[in-house]
Image (cartoon, rainbow, N blue to C red; front, side):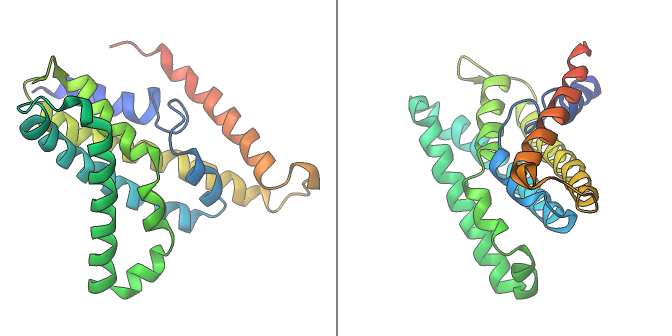
Length: 202
């Protein structure tokens, strides 16, 4: 493990290969929930927590269950089941411990189950930090850190989008492009701007 590798993961996950604006994962929640900053932030924090924990759990399952028993072909379906189960478990715990927080998150917790960004980071961790079924040195820590950074990249995109859309509510917008059409136009421009980070070399 070294600091340079962690810095590379951070810059790549947040800016160069942003999960929403470069990899185009999690677009459903990005368009639907980014109308206001508060729900966008709530969704972002939820996704960050789930991507981090999913990185931990899926790495352990792949390393100690799928690889030793030759079941790597079940990677995708097992990851989906793990993520869905974990999200439901988190939802039940929050509902029991803090009903106020559960009401605050509302529909956003179940939405994480179908957020492809969570599955994307789990698969990406395996592709990047395993070589022929063998874990690279420090791969567990890199995977967890990448889970956090993907969540940060998701948060950055959500907050930028929600801020722009809140400001546009004060403008006189033609009905033909209001709401979702305009959101897709904004997302396209934001994605183009993030392409400028592709010039970074490590």
